[in-house]
Image 1 (tube, rainbow, N blue to C red):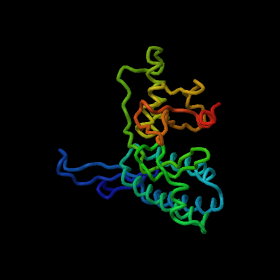
Image 2 (image 1 turned 45 degrees about the horizontal axis):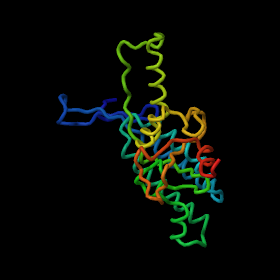
Image 3 (image 1 turned 45 degrees about the vertical axis):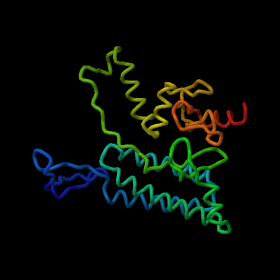
Length: 241
């Protein structure tokens, strides 16, 4: 098959496009395959249908690994537009889920009860949040494209002098980069340790971003006013433990 026609491989579509700004007149783009995007949307539809009648925490716990896993698989290619469209799709499916869960409540009540700005996505007012636990639905539309970073030429995994280099590379590429920009800066500032208990943030627990001075009291979304905590540590902090 000619590259100008494109082909699908492992869920990706690989195709040559004409581009007069390049030296060869062509540009190779790798994107999520249309069939995979369609299957993913169907999986989301089935999940929302299956979880109808559950609470917000349950919905978030089930959807977050699905959304984050799919985004992580495709975040290294040309996926921004696809992520944006999926983000809009998830938003309207969530609103529909809320309407069916609370058919006798007004739209104003539903919006105030579930939608708000969350520290994980500063500046974004329409985040779906379970206010009891502070959990937020992963916003796939906010996923940053992360290109593969080449390893330093002299770096060798078997060389003890480069042990810290590979540990840091692995940690940042696999874990920290899953978070929005503001949260990434906070986590790196804390060297990936929980400010409350001092243990590693990446021990399997959900990570929350906490405002030292609450927004309601004039606190900002600046890194100086944010700390990264385990979900349980965050709840303990609010309870005064």
